[in-house]
Image (cartoon, rainbow, N blue to C red; front, side, top):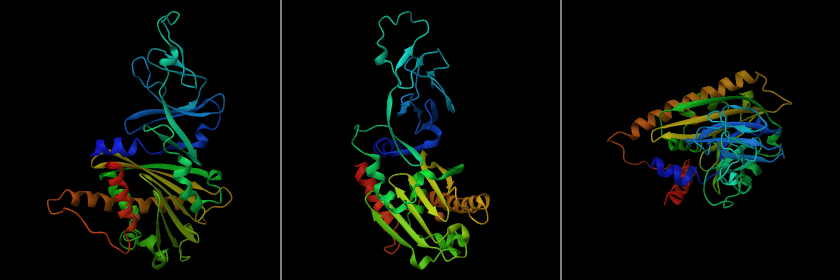
Length: 325
Ligand SMILES: [Fe+2]
């Protein structure tokens, strides 16, 4: 099922990987591994944003590492060199490239698009079949204005969780059902009786008014989700994004990025706001790992949806069913 989900869901959909400001200038590049696939996102000398499989066409080594600024992409193994457009430009020791067609030995392109402040990749699937701007339109309507592109990035943390990726997504889509039990402090700052869950095409938006007791939350919190693995949460002067990536059938990694409005900060400061957000995440990790252990028990077969809270969990499962079958 893990391989099937990766092939049918994760490689076919837009997945966020890095921030647009990391590849703002010509030559800027960022590398990483997405579902076992090394990639490089690079800004070309022509200003165009491109992404490639970061795999040398010679011997398969990762061509570049880390992030930075460069004039060309030179493999550290045998020196095969590619332009920022992915075309092979030099092969040391190959004479005049006799018998080679450099156009056929370039880096393999990956579909890339951005929705501020993030860059998204789509590893496979029909070219042009799925437009990122169409996918994020509903989220954009809920979260902008103000323009998310003007936010300043603060911090990134990665949480390795001993649960299937769907357990984490379900937890975040349960309409606030778990919030009073798992997050007493967060719950104390929200007017939970007014919590709403909007199920939209490939998107869920949950909103709840704050009761004024917690400055970090501002007037209202908005939790957005895009199928399959992306959350963007707005509260007070801050936004955080969460990327959920399956590792194995019973482990996943959740990557948090925090951003803030450059013109205003939470009264208690950014560090305190992130510490509070981190506390909420740690509470979710505990409960998700508990669920994973319970799912593996011989006593558990299937659960029931709460008709009051869990419409979004059902919508998530319906999308899974659609894309997996
Ligand atoms: Fe939670």
